[in-house]
Length: 174
Image 1 (tube, rainbow, N blue to C red):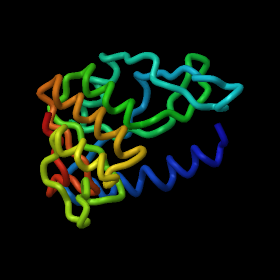
Image 2: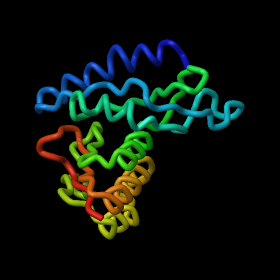
Image 3: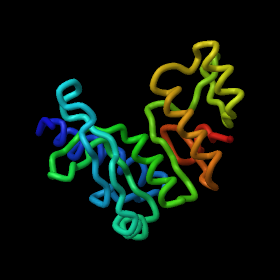
């Protein structure tokens, strides 16, 4: 992993997100340890990985300190090498493993937008399919929402997506 990537994330992106979250009364800790990644295919993708282990006790201790965690895209491998991972996948796996009551995806948009550019307050699988079929929801957002809906369906976790915590943006309802 390029040293500059780590610097950008830890010195610019994370502090900015922490500041934004604090303005709405949420003071998360940055997730530090308790999780591990493994390389997907180094020859093809380089230093890209996927979540491979969760130490629930270690993560629970961090969560207990603040009630919220900020999950980023860099995870260590077993050898201590930083790998670029999909932070949404990590957050969803943590939510499922720890059975958290709320999972909020912080994005650069106020929530899921409909064809008119208005925030959808509640997104069901049926509405997701309609918006995907009409190409309103595409690409990475589609993947994120399908996974988020799956978390909402299997647990008592309230899953939301948006650029602020209050108001909640879009609530994913299974």
